[in-house]
Length: 330
Image (tube, rainbow, N blue to C red; front, side, top):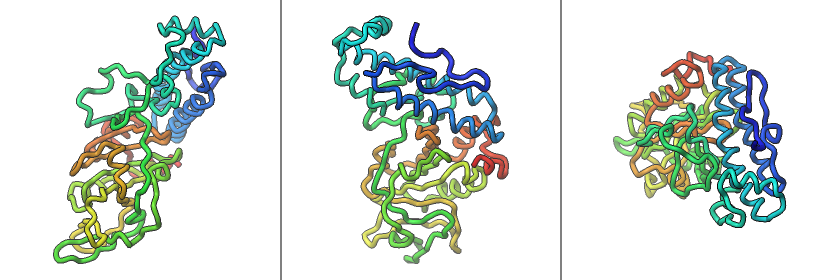
């Protein structure tokens, strides 16, 4: 016997928090895990309710959360036994082969829950990972790994981002011979951070690129506007600060002549937090999708990868959204 349900959802019935897993008061994991349960299932119910995903998406609630809860009981159980208060937890420790009094610094860091992940989830996509996540055993409840980011991980924080352009505004071109640039002074409304971009009401798509002058990136931006509704996913381009010129300009040859209105926010990573946190190498183009629950759902190389990823939600392989159907999500 263990103090959690074997299934968190059956049909239209869902359990979360301590209705799904009963915690020791000394574990201190009950409120956090309950909130994580709610965030995990809420955005999936929204997709299914509005006809954008098949009901099978809801089954990933148990698939993703159950390994986290099972791993959590192993860690919080060891903490509880270490304090020698509740003998019931001593019995659970034997199941995990954890000896009382052996709680170490790593286990204590785990209870911060920053390393909780869904790396083995069937609905995450990583085109940069050499070994598919499904073929490797991952601990869903672990210490956060600095300098490592995989799909299913908590999306890293990144402050000191400077806005160059905001959605629905044209890029302001400044002639410099045959080169077009965007002034950092145009459209800057103060610094922002990744956690201000993410929200429980939409997905977030971050395009990391060394420059907007890359034709492949320009094509990505245009295609994203056509296939993925802005109500479903917020789109952001993140440029490295190293590309800023001494005069305070960023390369951005976005069109051959006239200004082009784009529905994307362009940010400059002034302090390098975003590029380090999302493990983007110099000169690399990488697209990261962050789910409404703050989890990295996809790390891909181009729009085709995103189409396949969102196609998993819609039940149509290789199709992100048909016309404006995705606009009905919110």
